[in-house]
Amino acid sequence: MALEPATVRRIARLARLGVDDTEIARLQGELNAILGWIEQLGELDVEGVEPIAGVGQAALRLRPDLVTDGDKADAVLSNAPDRAGRFYAVPKVVE
Image (cartoon, helix red, strand yellow):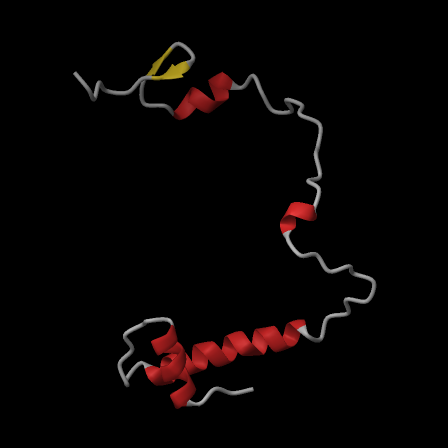
């Protein structure tokens, strides 16, 4: 499905966008590309995939809350221009 310039102007008006006539051709190409991507989605095999009305129904996949990369303060601070113990030292901003 390709959009005509009149349709692009109508979409811009409905979106309350001020579009010059010089921009119509560029927007027409961009919108046609978006519609092409949507048509590609229609080619996907969604057999057996249950539709959902919202993401509120989906359950989050949780992982164990484990520290896997900690206790590397010296490595993290190795490139710091100034440090105070295990912290970055920065100039005082507020007096």
